[in-house]
Image (tube, rainbow, N blue to C red; front, side):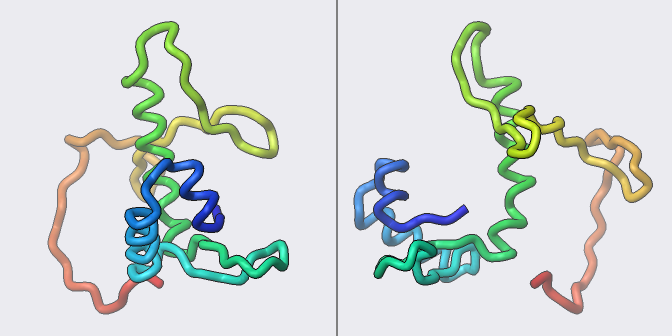
Length: 119
């Protein structure tokens, strides 16, 4: 995902100052980086970093939940399709390291100390 601030403004409908503040914050926390425009123009593009791309499964899971529970029967909505096959994505499940499908009651948390951060 990438785009310049004008395309974000057009698609999101945010005031210019609010959009600029939010984009700056997303750059500051490493979700986007600013690169020269891929079309060779003088514009700059906001491009997802590895950290930003790693949010994709979270966005897909929330979107799939919304598609399943937030629309009335007969109501129009959009679905996310895979580019290669034009089909809706498989519904995401939480699975154990062994591949078993997990429910909320199948999990617990444990506090640990991290010696490295994801890059």
